[in-house]
Image 1 (tube, rainbow, N blue to C red):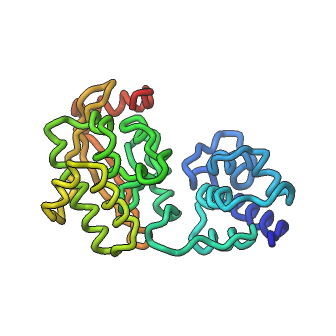
Image 2: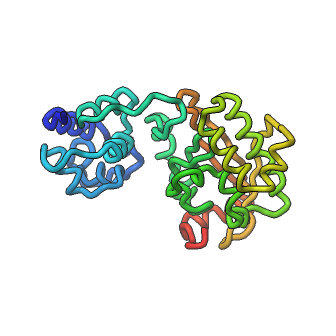
Image 3: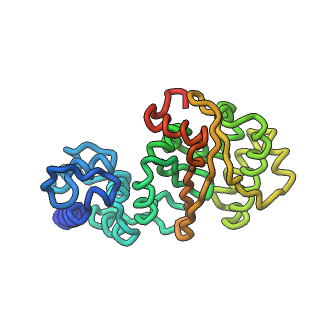
Length: 279
C-alpha cells in the first residue's frame, strides 16, 4: 500500500535538503527558496511540475515504478534512500544487482559539474545512462535507446550509421575492442547474463561480429586518444579519462582536448552550437 503522507514528507525533506549547485543548477541572485523548487525537481526527474506537486500534496494516482525511479535519480538519492522511496510508494525496490541503471549520487554530482566538458556515464555493456550537454553535442543523445540497441557495441555491429562518427581507419580497432569487452563481461557475468544474450544476438545478426568473436580476443582497452568525425566541426581528437564505480559497474567517461589545440577550439564551438539533428 502507498504511504501518501510518508512519501510526501520524505520527498519534501530531500528536496529542501538539496541546493541548486548540488544538482548542477544555477542558484540565481534573488533565490529565496530553501532547497530546490518543485519545478526544478520535476525537470530533473523528467516529469511535469503538476505531476510532481500532486505527489507532495498527497494527491493523484499511485506513481509508477518508472516515475519513482526517475524521482530518485533526480533527487540524487542513495541506494538506501531510493529503496525507501519505492517502499513508501507501494513498490518493491529494484533488485540490487551491479548491472542496474541507477547512477550513484557521487557520480551524478561529478557529472553535474561537467557542463563545459563532454562526459557520459555508461554501463559495463556500453549503455549510456547520462550525458553532459557537451557530450550530447559531440556524439548525440544516446540515452533514448531501448532493448539491445542500448549497447554501443550492439549498435556498432548492427547499425552502419553509427560508424559515420568515427574515421574509417579506426573501425577495425573498435570492432575488436567491442567484441573483446563483451567477452570479458560475459566471462564475469556467466552464460545466463545479458552479456550472453547480446553475444547470441550479434552472432545471429552480424557476419563481422562472428568473425571477430572467433578470435577470442580479451583485454583490448579503449585508446586514451579518441577521434570523432563530427558532421559540423570536422575531425576532433580528445583524450578519454575513466572514473569507475565498481559497486554499480558503471564508468564515467570524460573527454578533454589539449588547451590551445584545434580540437579544443572546436569543442568550445560545439558548446555554443549544441547537437545538430544529424548527430
